[in-house]
Image (cartoon, rainbow, N blue to C red; front, side, top):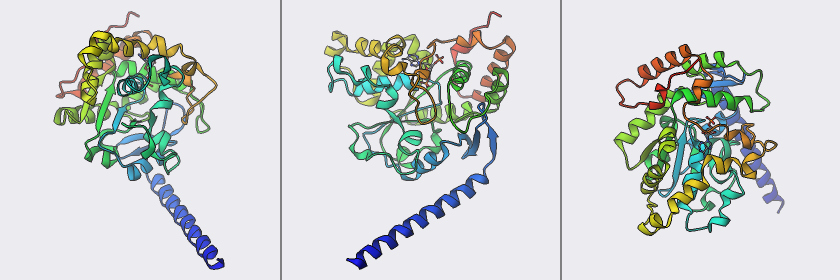
Length: 345
Ligand code: A3P
């Protein structure tokens, strides 16, 4: 008995030492990475070609090392402020439409961010997964902000499906800047004014930037492996949500039946997940409840419009960003029509 206790405590000491050693090695590795200040004064690390927020880096490394994708998994990848919340709700609704009666849909009581959680900043934030991921309802749905190149290898190697969403960078920047104003985290300092944040955005200095590498990584994969990666744009969803929903459901292997189409199931999902509906639900209005990166639950719903950049950027800021978009996405055939809206001021 005593022997057993001794051997147990020995092994746990070893584990702790091992953990300490790992932490030490990790801290050394982090110290060697190039660093920049984000718009909120918190550090960003240049990790594998993208700017990783310091609060997320351990979860990023841990999820890359340990996450094991299943073939039936669905991974929603986005750069922050590009329809993540909307697509979490839409994908959840599509795959669970036969599981709940409309009046019992969990989206009526919980934030889309509680129902579909981020790999690196929820599940793996503290190293080991926060719950047994094998016990999640099937198909498992995960979100991530990681660029394609940095996804956990098993996501790329397995047959799981990846839905990618992005947004015209002008609106993405404006949405991001407003969002940062609402964050509260210990590592934050003063938030930059919009013109200084804009300069940083154009250099790619913000969480998961630069946008061009992020967008092109998934765009190229969606062309190469269209059954693996579905590439979506916020503006297309706003333009014709029904067509986009059908495309999304087909891609996910959850196509709508003729009866469902005729019975209005697609419209029901679109309405449930609309900006106006979700924004006004109690779970999404809570300003007192914050997630792991210090965002209050109401910060995911601001204006929900295309082209709001005209109200926040000067014509020269718009012009410069348009040139940057053209230059960075040149040769890709990828265009953001919303970028052609001209500011009035
Ligand atoms: P704005 O700041 O332009 O209003 P993310 O979900 O990736 O964090 O992005 C948030 C942006 O998407 C915000 O944009 C938010 O208002 C908008 N948004 C959130 N839910 C939406 C929905 N159901 N329909 C349309 N836009 C939505």
